[in-house]
Image (cartoon, rainbow, N blue to C red):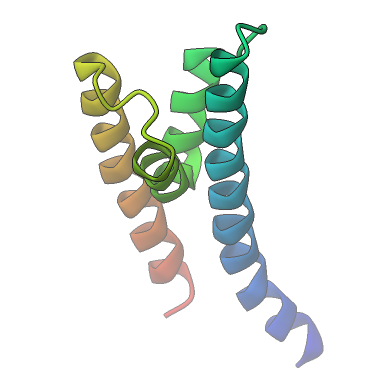
Length: 96
């Protein structure tokens, strides 16, 4: 029974962790942009959204007011949210 309990928590842990990483990546990129330093690649920020971290990416965008004016980034971030929601749904179907 113990191993089954762990299996249920792994997907949830992944979702939480990837969203924290995405959120902090947006914060880091915003901080570096204001200091004119080498930045986090836009592809990296979007990739985090597409692998389940779209809530963190979008949350970071609006919390830090970062990349909100860039239309292409906003559209891709929203597509990433749809992909993330699909991932969440597929994971939930595995455990029902």
